[in-house]
Amino acid sequence: MVAPAAAAAELRRWRPPNATQAALREAFLAYLDARPMDACDRSCAPGHLTASALVVDASGRNVLLTLHPRVGRWIQLGGHCEPSDPTLRAAALREATEESGIEGLAIDPTPLHLDVHPITCSLGQPTRHLDVRFLVRAPEGAVPRISAESADLRWWPVDALPPDCDGVPEMVALLRNTG
Image (cartoon, rainbow, N blue to C red; front, top):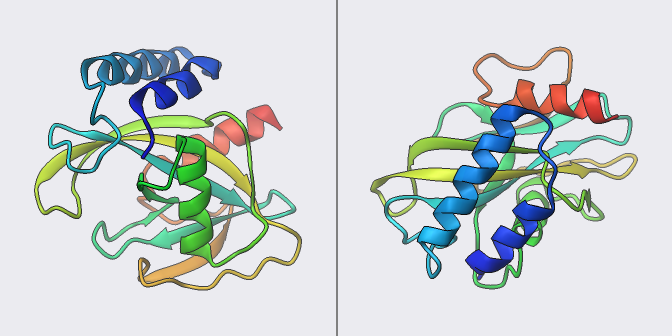
């Protein structure tokens, strides 16, 4: 399982792109300090860190989004940390690979974006996800395969994203600013 200390080290290495993301990073670090045993565990009822991936195609002109069955919106791939995940980055890559069916994904070493959102997750109780989002690049010619975790899965042009795709436009803007 991702140890809160490992998650904190990942966040400390990251240079946030703006004041809003810097404030979120400080809030995440404070939460990790306050919950040194369970901040990354889905059983942590007040909230827990999750790991997501903004998957872009080889051209960088399309993002892969999932129509999440429980959320009912198009969002980036990702989810809970599992016992086998040593880092948030590893959790994001595992989730992206599982949910996309694409082998050979390449993940950036540091986060792209942070977000906090309320959700009723898999344990059936309202909580918060403190989501750490990474940029992931798909290999040339990658063809996604829908998993049991998606109602649908498809490539969307970065200039024609679906409506109500929480946080994705912000991540795409950051992607454009970082090249």
